[in-house]
Length: 218
Image (tube, rainbow, N blue to C red):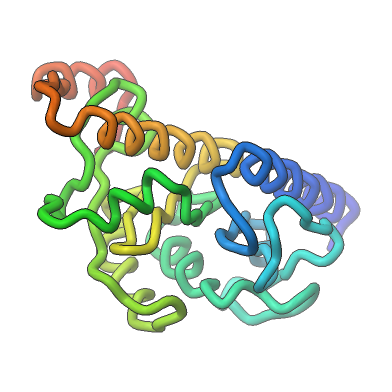
């Protein structure tokens, strides 16, 4: 690996640690839940299994090759296949964040959600960063069948919501994936706060205007 590639990878390792700590300290993840990955030139980095996102060590992040084989670092998260499935379908994805964040997880437990789009278009920022959020039926944690389930939707959606579990969100960069995850959590919070209250959603014309203005593919 060339010096430039090493420098780039080391920088990305530090970035994963910094974003992990930030999300943990703000209560977006708890204990050893959640995982973060990011592409590098010869594969991708992933937070280790049973690791707290608030106490990551950049040198101990798991590294996997392009086929998802563990090549160095601590053992990868047992949910590595979620990330691999998303990467395989989204060639432009540079990073993926999977959290059990409180409000998003709460929505994932609700009955009667639209499986094609779990959250309404409450704000322009949600539409711009997430678009539509499909629901993946419940699977036990670590169930390999989740991989094909995600793969079936990831080509058309940058984020999915795992029933009774939490969101999986991709972005072109790690920063973009984190910000999109945070926007999803804030929208889930708004959705729960507004239950039972007459609510105005963005209409089709407003969403079409956003798509045109920001060249959204949603």
